[in-house]
Image 1 (cartoon, rainbow, N blue to C red):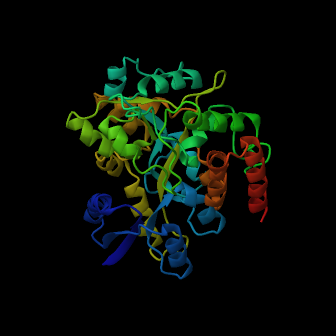
Image 2 (tube, rainbow, N blue to C red):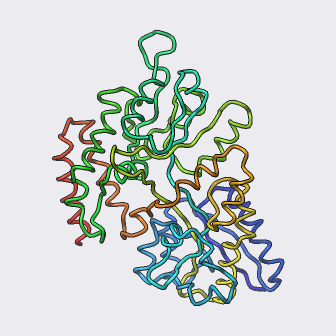
Image 3 (cartoon, one colour):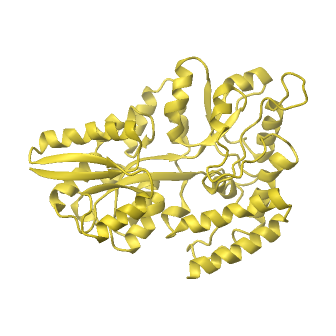
Length: 401
């Protein structure tokens, strides 16, 4: 019997669920035993080391930020020649998701699931403040700010805010859709330059708007200068002391637990856009990939195709961690969802953009440097335009290395 290893970065509960799915592959391939392993720290580094040393897993979960490095270093197998043979239909996948793992005619991972970034809102907080729920096309910066101000209040009259509008979106993965929805960007279209983009009028205007939520309007708690951002943001949202939360579909399992107990009434809104611009969000996706030097190539490709299959995605969808990559399956599940939240997510997919992390190798360096712009303004009072210009020049040097 052949042992096939699947490398994943998830926690224990998700790995257990993935093992149950993988066991179904073994049921139809009795010559193979599948073991799902989890690496929760330095996943990309450990995976690259395993591939380079000649001891790779047969299949691994490829996150979009790791995609450029894996492809440019020639570490992953092009799966496009095998899709018809294993019964995988790329045309059935959301094109916005498939594009994340495609380079020309090559396909380096079979999408598992994905999410756009959204704004969750607590209906109960809105109801208590007498504020209408957000509406898509009219959800501009101005209406967003008005709503945030109206739901932010001191409930006990002690002079301290008890309910905030939202948490400060300090990390790039949260604020980049705000930039896009203002007509700005952080890099040139080819991904080779930040100057002229990260410090453009549109992008700097976004930084001014977001920082003003704290410095001028007080609708967010004091920013937390931690790598993980504000650790209390979800807790405040669950408890009703924060009206809105910027997040992805990965938050759904925990949110739905509170909703099932009647402690939370959920709604979903798009990222607000600057007047005159189109609302745009970012897509984060993961997919099943096969190392280029895998020993059991035929079985590995078959296993990757099964893990990305409709059957596997349907089983996985019950966890609500992500949206299935197959359009028809996602639409079917949305039609069965009586809350309307899945349909709200799907309405945001068309026109959504893949993350820059799926395009630029070692994007984490760009991300860390970009986060300095608002931090410098909030911590030291630096002018946002000057900080953005300075950081953009530094990123240009990093990209040019």
